[in-house]
Amino acid sequence: MGFMSTRPLEIAQLVFRYPNAGAPAVDRLEMTVEPGEIVGLLGPNGAGKTTTLQAVLGLLQPASGTVRVFGHSPLSDRTHVLPRINFASVDVDLPSNLAARECLRIVAGLYGVRDAARQIDALIAQFELGSLQRHLVGSLSAGEHMRLKLCKALLTSPELLILDEPTLNLDPYMAQKVRELLKSIQRQRGMSILHTSHNMQEVETFCDRIVFLHHGKKLAEGTPRDILARFQSHSLDELFIRVAVSGELFQVR
Image 1 (spheres, one colour):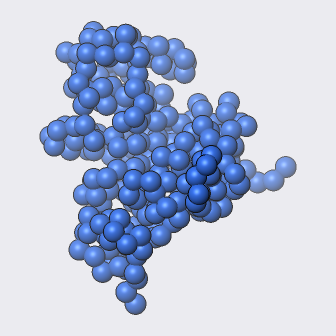
Image 2: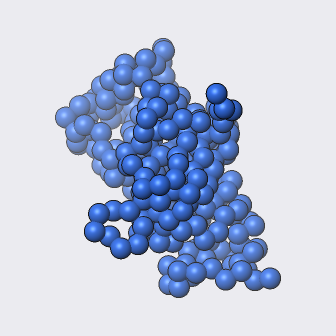
């Protein structure tokens, strides 16, 4: 038996094509997430970010290439992968007919979370949902619903947390609080995070490393500071616009 990687995520030559689409949605993507690292996956709409996340979660069968989560395939080794990961997405909702706390209690039962009531209490307090825990999920605002989804994702103590636009529906105060909370929890647990966002200021301060995608291809990779220096850009916002307009990055030598 070969060496089993302990990397939270390894993607090698990943290709995925949607039926009747011309170019691949993801085109020979290579990337990793190291233990305890926060990696931002960036790119305009249609760049391949969501497809990549779905492949990591084992929801898509690639045309070719491999995805390994802690050395296992999320497609064929789900019993090894799923207990070690969780996700929160702006596009994936929790059951609307359950009370917020009941939703977390069910998740805790499914994952066998120990001391679940105490952990639920702590997360509800951290994400300022105490007055809403008896409310139906369907009655929550978009921002409240997102905070509940983050509680759900963190409740299972994932080693790899996948975040898709986690602050999109939050007001500036709560967005900043959530970023600080996530960073604090990530440091305490040594958790790895794969993060997508169109908020470039958030990415610049939150992520250790970023991967720029466009039309499924990786255009650039590095720390936010290195990327800005390499392409002589004042901000990731400026760089993002350059990618969206031209589809290219021109490295200044």
